[in-house]
Image 1 (cartoon, one colour):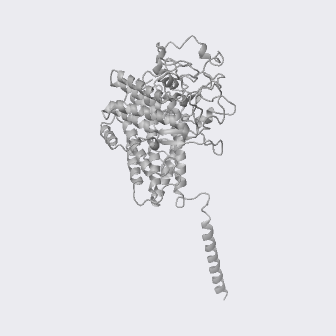
Image 2 (cartoon, helix red, strand yellow):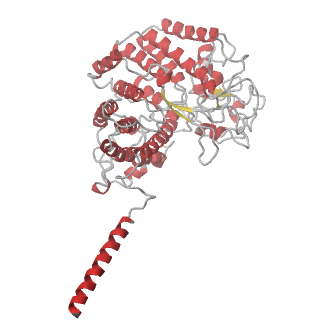
Length: 563
């Protein structure tokens, strides 16, 4: 009897224990940290898009410095940056963008959310291609495997590019697949339009193929096919851009450069590039900035906001270079070839390679304007910028605009004989100007009628560009006109001018380094980040940009091609 009671007791205890264990096991899944089987694909996509934007602007800022669109401190290419200068770009790319895409894509496929997987493939492809453009050979085949491989090797840039093109083709398949369930609720770029994402994928293929035109004889036919199909970003409604807000905190949703330049204490927190401002405002007009010339660039008042319209404030303390006898001996002798120190009419930035200390000039530095950073329109106000001015930071990141497509088509026409380069240049300039002039209205800002560029001014500027194109003696000089206008139209995007400069050497006669006559070899690629080379036994040997020309695979130009 006692044995039977023990058996019954043991059985009851076992059942209770197993039942408790089952209930406890279910509690091991923390609802605050959902696993992949229960994860929300759209939440993954939201993180993917935000991570991608962070990667893009971080990369754009450094690339823009080297492209002379933003001010580069220098004075030597070999030590202007350190390997850890690129750690954030690298970790954002691999840990955040690519890793999130790798988790999102199979989950979306399982749930038949093919649009989301297509979008993730496009963002991943852009990121990988841009890593190649900036670093050269990078991990791909062995990357993001977790514990399976903690020390991934770097794949040849050309093979990663091939994977990028294939990934974009896969994205197009996903985005056009039948049987897909509801599209994303939170598409931050195209509001759920699969058609626009497909057009972007084809445009990115065009961009990456044009990058390889110097080293791949088969690229021309592929480029021709894309141009013939013409499902590319050709109108402003298709523009691939990230829109910022005006929220100050939790989170700060403003354009990052607005946040730097427009602060409560007053005083702009960064230097714009004297060279870029000079190309926009002065190069076509004898070297002196102009806003009143009948053919002045209509975008200037939108791009840059002058806190002062003259240099009455300049002295030995506030602008030491202003009182120097003149530019260094190694500068070009013709005044209208390149600026030095102060370029005129109150524009205040810094020269390429000027590594001198910052004087008390914050209230006189030129700030980012209303386009693309959501700052102020330049109405000759002569006032210091402050928090909340202008568009309040409601700017954009111009990742790929329709004008870029036309300029790149013009390059293809000039170098590969595909299309009418002059007509495409004209459309590119007109499209760029239209985008900029229409931008304030998109964020509910009006511009003063007295200083808003007229239709006549726009026409005159386009005619001046075409006159310069027609006067160019050969294709190389005509290409310089195309790429200079492309450079101007790219304001706010540092990645494309860095690519363009290494691929074409244009704009030619770019401003030399101000800090030294011998800055070393131009940085044809970034240092490998310290988080890669210091922690990975299979990482390539660290590069030495500045000491030699360390090029990416598509750059077969001579070592001294650009400086």
